[in-house]
Image (cartoon, rainbow, N blue to C red; front, side, top):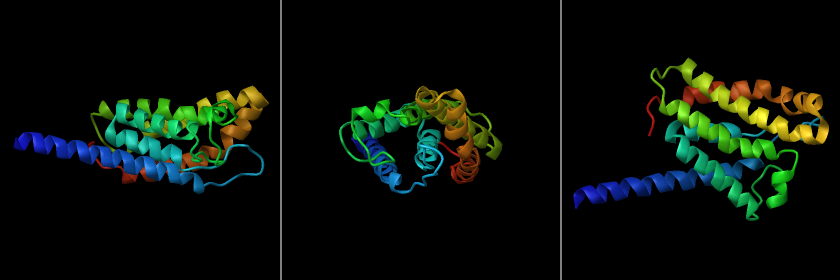
Amino acid sequence: MQTVLVANRTKVKEILHFAFFLLVISLTPSIKIFLPFTPVPLVLQNIAFLSYAAVYGKKKGALLAGAYILEGVLGLPIFVAANSGLALLMSPTAGYILGYVVSSYLVGYLFEKIKINSFFIRFFYLLIGAMLIDFLGMLFLSVYIGWKMAFLLGVMPFLWGDLLKVYIASFLLPRERK
């Protein structure tokens, strides 16, 4: 009986962590910086998704990103431009949004397989995830503005910010996974 109560308490705690992160990530679009030369703003969601996946693993990380997208598709104004609905998944920034799921899964997978949990390994894995989001974002954006412009406007302006976010997250991540 006591084992069941402990297991249930652990499940409730996991659900509360998930709901809390989903709420926080859903509120982060209010923290954005629009650059005048690109349709893609600077955001914090990417590092939030990657950090969650690093701590909780590939399945929970991808599930969190999927739940976030579902919120937006169902009409909640949670995406950066406060847009919502299924049409947003065909917008120039859709690749970044869909990239959250793919990169969360990959980063979660990498952190599950980690043997040496050093700052440099955490930095490298998070950087892979951030670059994957940028790459997938560039793919969708290129449909609207071409490859060269998609790289110049959808990747280049964000490299330094991504490096800074990854650097900070690498220090803040716990050394042990949950």
